[in-house]
Length: 111
Image (cartoon, rainbow, N blue to C red; front, side, top):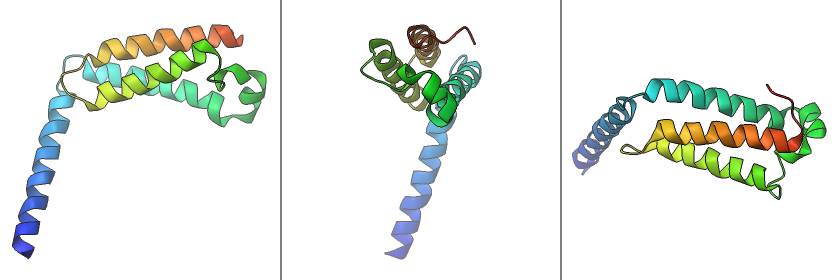
């Protein structure tokens, strides 16, 4: 029974590695991931910096349509990052546009 469990774990690990390699071998993945990470860092400043939260409360308020669209774009980009066969680069592009629109609606000057 122990050998069966060890075999299943090894297989799951190998399959997981293959899926990760497949995701990362997509055309433009590295560039899209770097851009995605930069956008996440930019958004996190509004969530984690109390001064920015006070100055730009609209960036955390999902009742603001542009912020709601930003949150949806964040979720979609993350889903595409983890799922092979998706257009990750396009999802990151949509995230970039949604970020700019949310910042404009919140009164943030260009970054």
